[in-house]
Length: 345
Image 1 (tube, rainbow, N blue to C red):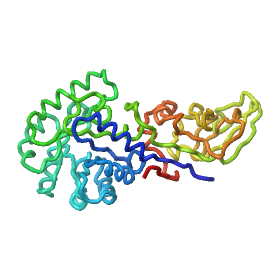
Image 2 (cartoon, rainbow, N blue to C red):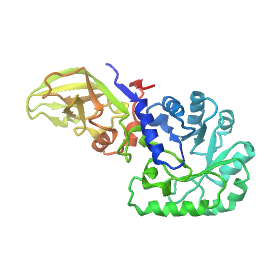
Image 3 (cartoon, helix red, strand yellow):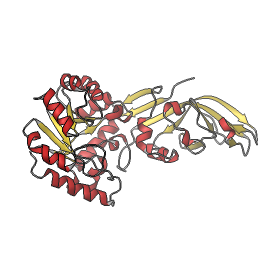
Image 4 (cartoon, helix red, strand yellow):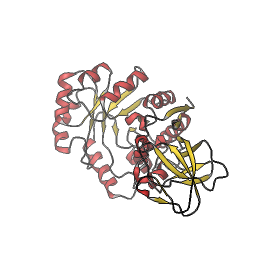
């Protein structure tokens, strides 16, 4: 059938990191969880390490162990989920730094690995991960005596600069960490863009590295080109695809393209998303199926062997809008069947 080609521009990722680092007043790390937002954690982190990044963030200890094999010794690899019950061996063997989220995690880590470094994540209002103020207050003195490397929290509404939650979380974080001995971190991409008051000692850009909003100045990072399997003529009144959801309003040429919801192109974009042949727009005609898309190519003078669904003409956020989701989901859903090609390595 053929495989889509996912081209990942490491030069663009590096340029986006440098731009966000210039906006940050302290150290700039990088979030490479979910396999580098679908772009390849090993490839992305290795390139950013050459650019000067020394602090990386992953979701789980398993991700951290894989990243350590790519990066080797030296850079800090911080684990957002902290120290789970089964993580001790991975943390020890791969020199990971868990962000401890509760007194229970703190006790587990300091008992199992008393000399190993750790960070602490605080809940400043998102109610997702982190110690709340009473637990932090009761634990702080003891935690500051150990190898505490970072105290962090996470903003819930940073992509909306006017949201009152931003100022409330900033105030809570400032109060909870006043006088703390370790470096502090509050901001991912959106927080960096809120300004210096939110940046503290370390920033943790994520989606902005990969070309996503809210970093509007980001360089595009990914191009997804999908092979055309077959082209057919459809008469006026004929239907296309499952549930016959597209009816031809004229004599129509339909290109069947190799990709579908098994590859991360979710079904909600049926009949709404568009692909590109250079500058020419070609709209989806019919339902997204597991492995195939059907595309109206009637107005093309010639049908190419590939159509692009991510490209300079259509960013991850623009495709996400057609799919009723966010750019994060588009990036992290990019399927394993694509042939990944790196430029700028």
